[in-house]
Length: 297
Length: 220
Figure 1 (cartoon, rainbow over the protein chains, first blue to last red):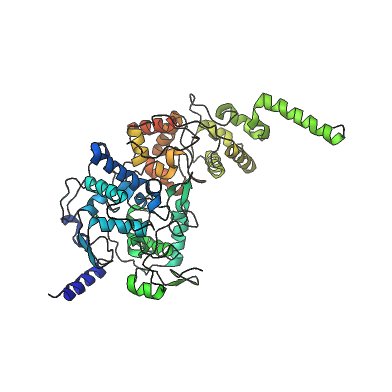
Figure 2: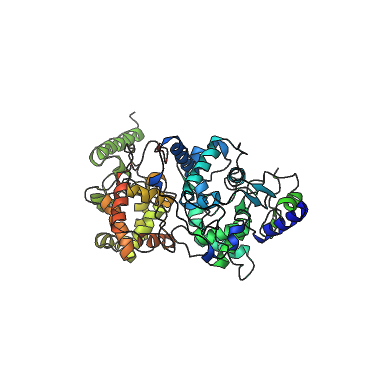
């Protein structure tokens, strides 16, 4: 096949796996996936490598403290990857590490794991494009590698990413989502979605606004956010959200303003066409009279 | 200084000094209703560690209001507090809660080294090995070093070990019910007796008001 044909196939595949970061492994039924348990924290090695692993863990759990210079919001990596990146169905690092290099529809290139981490900082952390050899990237890579100790590469590991959510019985609805948010989310994340902080440290992450993920992040896609919420929220009360409620509340949350996509071309419509041309993105949509993603004077 | 106004001011000031000397500063602004509270919870509102009476000082007023209301209705089953709360009016609940919320929490550095072991592990990492849903870290809702978050999630740091352990046991047995989204009912029910002991000891050892926060996770 010619390269263009490959591209077409991959693009189609990318649309099929709308969760771009989860890739091929998501297509297998759960029963065919390999279970994996990462090593316990108490087994962390010593020495220079162990120091890097520990530093990576600190960055991952307390990003706003250990990587403050690299990020542009108040989110910790562990806000969306629970259990410090160890928890199955919560974007565990051990499953991500062993899944790269891989083709990503997001940038239509084969990405290695470092490129994947760079994207996390650039989009989810609304931060800088870190150099591949930056100490932050190397430390998080070391932590990921160590968590994946003994995991096979190229295998479909159970618990990777967030479990794909069935389509909602009814189309996602902003008003129903607002009601879900008020009763089940606002307690922790605040009625204004701005999160809560103790002495400046993030306890509950901002879900929209300037301290949240930007429009280029995976979470700004309804399917990703809904899948995360269904499998992981509310903390301590998982299972309280129905499939419909997860989609509805994702619709509500991602219908608010957040930091601009760093790939912004100068035109919201053009940026949507280029990077957000999917029914799962609210970028460029008009909600309550506001064009989401439009530059503010 | 001989004007009547000044003289009156002087008398009030003198009376205040005498009051402060007898009752300590916080009692100066205390509504009369707190007299019965302070015998167990302390004139400074910092509780009684050895007897297991919790500190109330600096806890969020809405949290304290909810607890008194729950004692009154029996959502929190406690013979002593149930009896006391039964006689409180809503106005009294509001004024008592506002009073304790405004009391200062004495500064005290965190212990060095910080406590570690299974209690710290549960507080900081949780125990995710429950199905279908694990136990999130206590700190993910009660804040860094157990200092509490916002108006809903109370401080655990420096509370008596016996009090924390008793509350977790009460969440398990249903003697304590309610709370926002029923979250603590979900969480408390999954803990083992050993986990309860360990995490209660961990939070009891922390400062209720450290002058500065240690860097989290810094074990290198």
